[in-house]
Image (cartoon, helix red, strand yellow):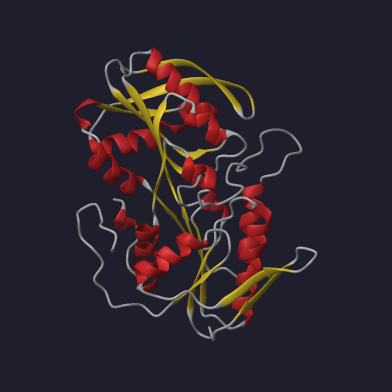
Length: 327
């Protein structure tokens, strides 16, 4: 089904001439995008030699074609990144007209600045690698830091999962008693944007992080007493921030806590931690392929972003506006 824009309209342009190529990082999402666009995935082989070197062979003619390479750089991040780079090199050497890297999850995005002396800015390095491989355009979803778009010297579309989340919230909850909560001060802009779309107030959890991977919620800023709270963030990794925020919100008088997160990284024991937490429901997208543990978790639900990405890809191929999907 085509993705509805905010005003309910849909693209009606002619079917563009393009091809989709998928790596191994998230085949179910790639297949769902292909089904939505009514295009088959281009036949290709992406495999490993015995020493784990990546080998790619494209089995169809792509000369002069508009190519979209579907590949998240999620775990294992380095393997998936190398798959992307080698796929792009293969397509470039096969005389593709234009190559767009569609990266629902952009790995290394959290390394977007120097946190101390003699440390790298790894997301800039990854951007350089992608450009030098021969990518003409990048399409990604909910970058951890918007300024990463500036690390590229090629067009970069940072899409937002908010419309998908808004639709799900409106289908499952009454907005009369909701409050959107940012789990930290840094996410206030994201929380305010979602709250504005559904016309509800916001609150903020002020936290102190003692060391990477651990956080302690100190204060809840805003009125949450007697309300249902929706935590909103771009990435859930260890789950500690969300779990602590949920505990603090309930202690402040919230009746229940849900969370909507774009990228479910969920490393280590994060799934088990969330399953035992005060979070009633954690909703993530399939930007990263859900693991069996995620699928089995009683309080984790997955939203598909395939219609959104398919619509954005189709508009890009037709040279139509992509930003109108969100504003």
